[in-house]
Length: 246
Ligand SMILES: [Fe+2]
Ligand SMILES: [Fe+2]
Image 1 (tube, helix red, strand yellow):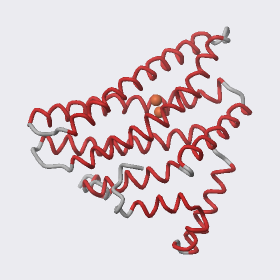
Image 2 (cartoon, protein in one colour; image 1 turned 60 degrees about the horizontal axis):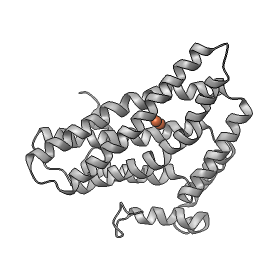
Image 3 (cartoon, rainbow, N blue to C red; image 1 turned 90 degrees about the horizontal axis):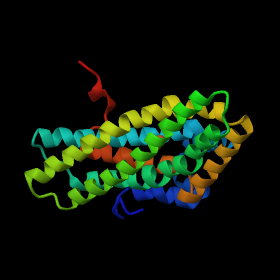
């Protein structure tokens, strides 16, 4: 993982993931470890596709909050740590674009295309879902282009114009991904149990669990939750209470 400097305390957590339960037992309090182990076993028994994808959206949502804070600071002519934004864009790259969206593109979207091809009775319903998938797919590509540009702007952030360009791209990113993930959560994922059988849905969950473990050597969600939490703390937006209206 390159986004965190090697001396960063988060590396200790990654080490726990890399070395497994036995190494973790040496440093985690017994009660906490018991809770964590029970949770993991439960997860391994019941991996639900929609729940998994939606909590990945939760990580994306928290990156959007980081981006919103950077826009706020640019508008207010305040400083922000560019490295934190580079690291956040790296979360988008590694966890959202190269993992989450790839799952959607390779395993979810094709199910809707297949459903459309064999659907006679509910043709209109299938067509609506197919149109949605086409837009979602286009937006994944547009998102990747935006991330390229955001990272490249961040690497040579010198003038006020650079800061404005960055703010503009971050705004466009938030504007697209807010409805994108909301539409997937409320329309696409709930349609999965309609278009495939219970057995296929369960098998897909098993496949996703296997891919996650192969990709991250454990639960990618835990790893990226730690990253996003650390970056929120760096920007002073971690404390939830600050968002409660007075
Ligand atoms: Fe998507
Ligand atoms: Fe998604």
